[in-house]
Image 1: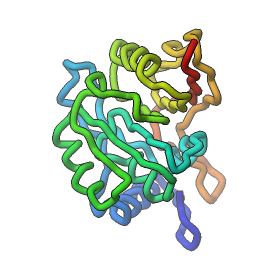
Image 2: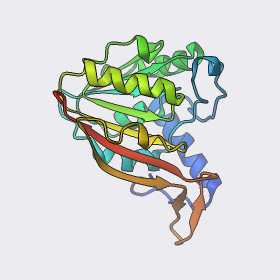
Image 3: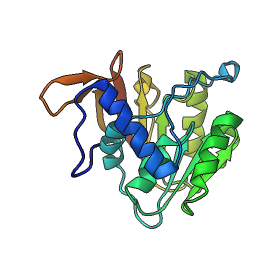
Image 4: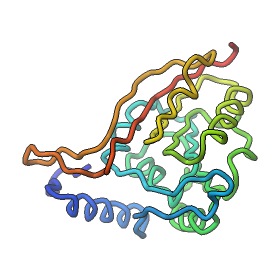
Length: 217
């Protein structure tokens, strides 16, 4: 997460300070959270920005090129999109967010980047066919996830990569479905400091899985 010439973080406060510095540099505004969801009755979970050090690893599983189009499902204020432009990945990225206030914050800073777009709305109402890659950080309940997976299987006409990070053990929703192959999995809990000791970032491990889907099964 720390760039060359900057001081590596040694405490949780250091990490949070560095995260905010990156937000301000890329977006001009802090994207810190979490934000309690006002749409829990629709199955939405609280919005929690993914730390940049986590995004660095998770985004290494994507093979972006000039034709790529990433969809961040439940993008909140847009931390994953900020990482996308910070790393100058090729292609485009879109975030969809149900909460108008969070979508508004993301749209305001993202307007400066021509390869970013923010959609305010429900992903279940969105046509998924234009997208080649998907990122989910625990955006909604299991029932909504099931509907989203089924939509992606039907609507996306090409092979795609999906990264799902969650503390709820959502892997079983994908296992055994035709066309889905697990590429990688793991957990995040601590940040390894420059002094060789772990800095606790999460109260409990956050699990992730990386999936490749081939259509036509």
